[in-house]
Image: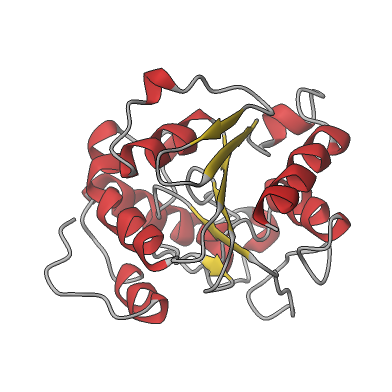
Length: 227
């Protein structure tokens, strides 16, 4: 996806990104999921569009995930909302004072985050949670535009290696020179810091690979560096 006219604000970006149809496979999948639905949500109308970022337009901390989940963000229309990954993320943000509540159920549930913007390098739910390289490439224009508009960014917290790599490519840096690892901390040429965390996926949180204590330690470090 190529952005052909300048973006004046995050609200301008958000208004454009939700109408993107650049990736045929992702468009077909997000709409099929919304049509078939999960039994627990059969009476709900799914969002079934790309997701804008969520949070403070003056954020000093940017959290970079991977992509919306099929029955989470693709259903609710907000990053990390309506699924177990979101539960884990916002519980952590609430514990360290970056969110006003620990739950994220739907777009109008009153959730607010402070000093934080949450985004992803892929804006549509991909099959099996695995975007193709060309889909990452097409979506990179939205990702770059959002990061360019976040002038107050001091810390980037990457949830998983895909987010880690996508952010380094945004800066024109080779991901191979910055090893991903939970708790890893990278000082970057632009004067900001990249922190790494295992992704808040159920695969990690239910197996104990990522615990609340581990995640809280990374969040507290992000707050310290951004202060």
